[in-house]
Image (cartoon, rainbow, N blue to C red; front, side, top):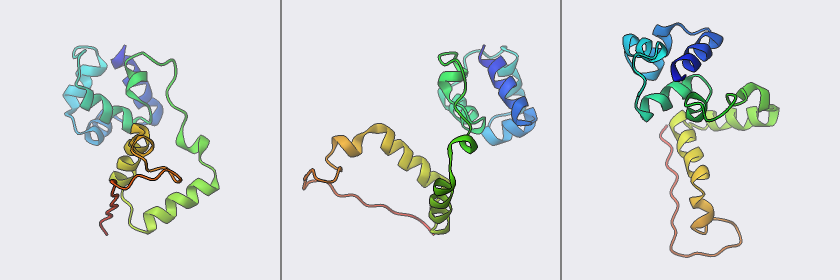
Length: 131
């Protein structure tokens, strides 16, 4: 099942097996084994990389979700495009975006008192962006 979903999404994106393997940081033969279900137990790290480059998530690849995530182009309006352009222009990297997304998903910013109006004096936030 994993292999069929990866292959289907790869073909929909117009990626060759070589292109996706390069993007995901795995060998072409390993990706081929996954797609053909010869290798049916890839690591979560490999699945995460593949899912990221196919604009989907691991849950979909593992069969726990009926459909892949909605394409970014379908949900980002001009305001979002402007916000993202400004952040990139100011030096924010894709790694910075991923770290911020992970922080928001973890809810730590809520649980640790980083919400306006809640006072918690023991937290220090430092945002470092390399230029």
